[in-house]
Amino acid sequence: MKTEANSEDRTTFHALLHGMVEPSLLSVGTSIAVLVVAFASYCLVFGSNFTASRFYRLQMADTQDVQTLVTHKVLSRANSGQPGIVILGTSVPVRCVESEELITRLVEEKTGTRLVAHDLATDAQSTWEMAAILDRLQPGPGSVIVIALTPGVLETAGYGPDGHLRELVKWPKLGFTSAAFDEEARRAGVDVPVRTGIHAIDNAGFILSRRKVMLKNLLWGGYDYADPLTAPWYDHVNRPEFWNEEIARIGKHAKAYVANSQSNYEVIRRFVERLRETRDIRVVIMEAPVNPGWFSVPAGAEFFGRYRDDLKRFADGLDANFISATDSAELTRSDFVDFEGHLGNAQARRRCSEVISLSVAQAIGVSQ
Image (cartoon, rainbow, N blue to C red):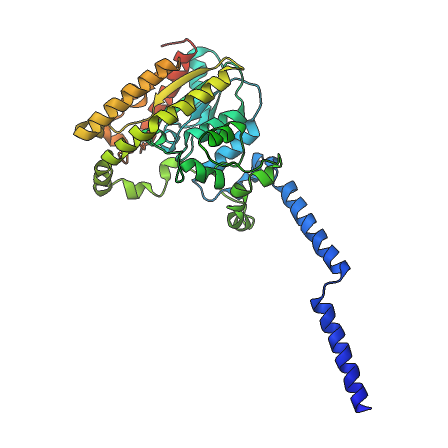
């Protein structure tokens, strides 16, 4: 009897173990169903409407996350069909705009025409991202596109195995896809993932890179974008030691500009021509703020003199207006926190905003 009992116990144990390690048809089906529901929920929740809504704050990495803010603006304002003022550029022009409302009001005062301003500059913005922003926004006929350029934009390498464009395809800084961006990537020999048309899948790199941020932000509602003049890194760059380091790198930047500027100018030319094929737009090429201190450094004066001449020639060839923010806003060395061109006070930023409004007024044929 004892042997029979032990045998029954072993049989029961083996049956239980078998049930645990050998999944049944029901358990497999349940697992698949859970995965399907989870995937469908991900696609449903993280559609374009999520970032276009006020929930974009949950994706903000911090109070200076301008890429998420601009993603929100583009997705929420796309295809309005209304003419507007579109401002593109890097972290330098980010600090050249006091507010969209101010630009809108100043232009209306100068021209009698109301054009709503869209401040879409982002940190380290590339020419390919400019193309993507305009392609998705689709500004209406009569719009003015202000392209605020810095040497950093034009010296960025997009081609080759280590090109910046390849990294942007893999880990995009903006949360939307664009046919114009994909076209530029393919032109540069960069493989583009298959686009499904499903926002959550096509922008998984942007969304999933913020998964930890979103979990944290769910607890307290996320971030509001703060005044960029209060960026924490200002304390690091606003000191003589950092300025000397920037001056020492001028040769490296000049070399990169010579190697890569032409390809970046061509990207700009293509996206402007693409817009002009379907609508009447005006274009302003703005030399974003340049620290006048460069002109007291021989290598800096030589480089920035050439750079300005190139911008003027490019604007002429593009049938665009040219304006220098530094000259027109009468910016002085003390207005900057570094040599890269970041403005450091609200008064200088207000003057720069006034220059942008003036450039728009001139572009639509009104001068004061």
